[in-house]
Every structure is written in structure tokens, then in C-alpha cells.
Image 1 (tube, rainbow, N blue to C red):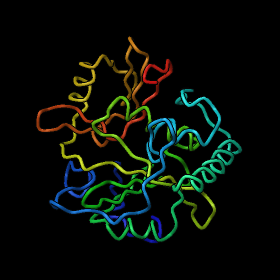
Image 2 (cartoon, rainbow, N blue to C red; image 1 turned 90 degrees about the vertical axis):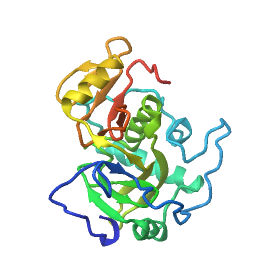
Image 3 (cartoon, rainbow, N blue to C red; image 1 turned 60 degrees about the horizontal axis):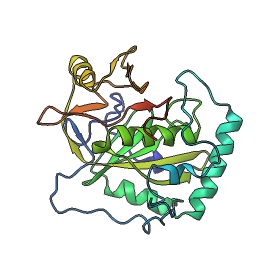
Image 4 (cartoon, rainbow, N blue to C red; image 1 turned 135 degrees about the vertical axis):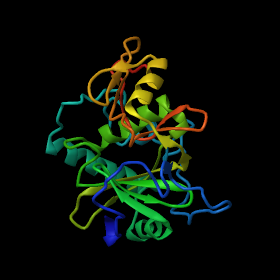
Length: 252
């Protein structure tokens, strides 16, 4: 964890959950607010704030932001380092470079912490903050751009659980970390049967373990297990941390 923050129960890593069972983020304290981390992000000129997980964020690299990622494809370390340097430069020029004070401010606000395979998590009374961990961007051998594209597509498919880009910082060892946050979401973890049924209503069929595909659109969802998918009181599915692939760019 950054700056030596203790992780609660490291023997039970999870990517969601939250301070309470089935909670993500934090809004248990009515009227609570977070310490501002930085000035509001500048608008990109396309009606998008630089802090959005969107094309404006993907603009740190000149590649096609719609290019799909391939699950079993590995990016080279050279590509990862190149994109990391581009992201660092982009963040510096777009009020998205986080210093140690900002990171400590997030940690200080946390009412609970957790650790998963992809992220270190800090749960404040308002949000769940995710820090990419393990000197990687989500999955191994993924570039920063692939990681951010994952959230962009997920936000478009599941806007009720949209993730926001907070910033980028470098650890003492020189490796980069992307910080995002997600609003507090209350819900219960879904069973595999419930998840499959709910996604079937949206046109998705099973496509491997915790994976689904829409034959009509070609959209693919990965890592859709009970730790990453919640259901609200009305029984509606809320995927909070899944990988979405969009080979046909139907989501834009």
C-alpha cells in the first residue's frame, strides 16, 4: 500500500466490498465531504473534463482510443514504459499529477482499506479510491492506455457505477500508479446464477469463467464474479469492477 497504509485483512483480498458488506465507496455519514485533492480538471474543449475516463483522458497517446484490447495479448515492457511516460507528461500538463500530499490526504480520509489483485483501495465516507498496484495497470502486461480504456468502456456500458480519473503519480521506485474513484454504491454481492441471469436479460451469454459475450453487439465482459458485481434493493445488477471489451466500438 502507498506510504505504508495498513490493509485490512490482507488474507482476504477483494476488489469491491467496502467498509460494510456489499458497500462500495462510502456515504454512510450524511453530509460528509472529502478534502479537495486538487483544482477541478480543465475542460478538453470537447465538453469533457480532463478528469473524466473518456477520450480526453485517452488523449495522452496518439493511438486510436477505440482500439480493443485482447484478453490474452501481452503488451511489451517498452510499450508500457512509453505510455507511462506519455501519461506522466499529460498528467503534469492537465492538473492530474498527484504529489505525496494528495496521496496522504486520500489515506487520511479513509475509513477502511482493502487490497485486491489489481488495486489497493481506500474507502472514504464518499468514494472508493482505487490505486493500481503490483507495478502494473490492472492485469499484467497492460499499458496505462489499455487500463483506462477498460474503465471508459465500463462507464459507457454501466453508467450507474461510473469511475472517475483522479490522477497519476510515481512511486519511489519510479513505477507509475493510476488513481481513480467511484461513488458509494450500496448493494449485495450477486451469485454466479444471479449474475448470469441478469446479464442474459441484457443479451449476454456465458463465454468462459466469469466471462460473458453479447452475440448481437460483440461486447465482452470479463471478471464478472460476486466480488465485482452488486445488486441493488430493486434487484438491478450493478457491475462495479469488470473489464469490458468492445471489438466493434459499438460504445464509441
